[in-house]
Length: 112
Length: 115
Image 1 (cartoon, one colour):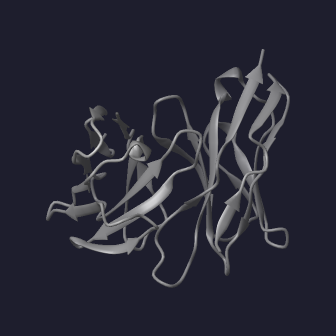
Image 2 (tube, helix red, strand yellow):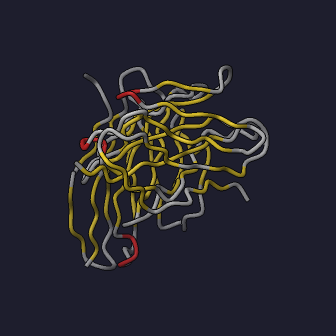
């Protein structure tokens, strides 16, 4: 089953470092969205990519950036990591005009 | 501001009893509505969605949800709870128009089903 694949599953970074998270969308999907889920909270929308461009952005600082590749896969980059960036990062894929979202299992980022 | 409220942090129910997890939303227009479930250290699993049509939506694992436009609510229900239903449940809305294709989530409700 070609669901949403995220890597790595876990990682630990030091404050001030940079991190890159990766996402492969479900087969047939063309849109990738990223969400941050802090402990005990609901997921918060970071941004969405379609046709290799950022289409929408949530209330996150410029330290959060992304990229979408021609094969629709995506990366989330976070610079100058803060302790508060520790969270589960979820990738969701969809069709741009669709109403179905498939989520990956997430990447658990711990900043120490 | 657009928002989703899940007024209960936790819902406790005995196995075999009916369950309800509440959700209300504040979004203009007629948004799409979703329920997701999350098990420990896992991503979100889709349960059901409402786009249009019948106000009672049936989903996975015997769950259903009732859409009430006048009360802007979308409560999740199941006639007979199982211990294996114990998990974290999220309600989400997708606003329509304005180029929106993002989901706005509630804070989640932890469901505990006791044997």
